[in-house]
Length: 399
Image 1 (tube, rainbow, N blue to C red):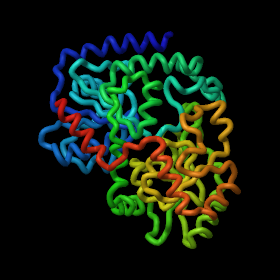
Image 2: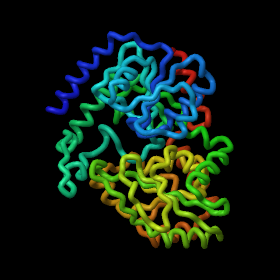
Image 3: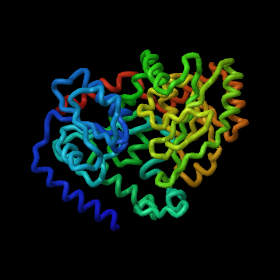
Image 4: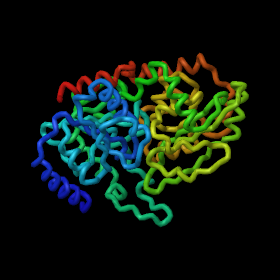
């Protein structure tokens, strides 16, 4: 109750910015609360920049310096939750984000807020359809959790959903199944969904070798090496999450080398909500600080994840991929659970390192393609490589 009251008071105070007119040619972009220049907001920004540069004032919410963003001229940069951020959030005509806007920032009547979301497909549950998570209730190593979600996850999700529905104009959908489950999870009507696929995934429908080369160069990987990318999702309470890699890296590399008769490099990408900076292992290249995940997916010759929706993106590349799920039973029963049964996902799953090794060594490309195509079809994929252009045209029509 105290948290809700504070949010409502701050939300009321934010109306002071209504004394400023809405900046009709301004678009504010934000990815994961300003943590990076990446994801769907970046894809939309780059399209706008190269096609309507002279007609738009660009605002990026970015907390740390971004070399990629610095390459663009005349961009207004503000830090998340700064006074400048509040001003531009409350006065920009269009707000582009990959998560819902903070519930203490109301959307003005003539503003447009588009939530591009940050994952495709329909895998782990979110919002109102997520269960009361045991991991949100527990305290970890003396860390005391203070938000109301720690005591009643469902009450918190209900509270957020009500305000998110008020403050969201459009919501980008990757597939029919995603629209269905998010209508229940987010309380948004079907008319709010733009069913185009994800803008960030358009890259997989054209030649992306230049992006793969860019990532290989930045990570210092030799040209003749193949890359396996391991990118697990987060677990339970992100406030106390620590990096634990249960995957047997040596065995994994050995199996890859045996199956494809080539040398492989193991690249780890931790979830944006986790803490992976200090990860040290002689067999690992830690790419957790690499801004754009799509570039790493372009780079990868093979992919390993668990319950991350990045599997949806990678399925579009049709390259080899596997799921490593040693905690599957716990995740199903005590963490988020799934919208779609794991047996219907695009990639085979292994509960142990030995099982993963066998999946790699016995990989059959024809069977893989059939499974991927069936998965994309069964979820009703909207991905066609034209999402960015379509979404930008819709937004421009409101400016």
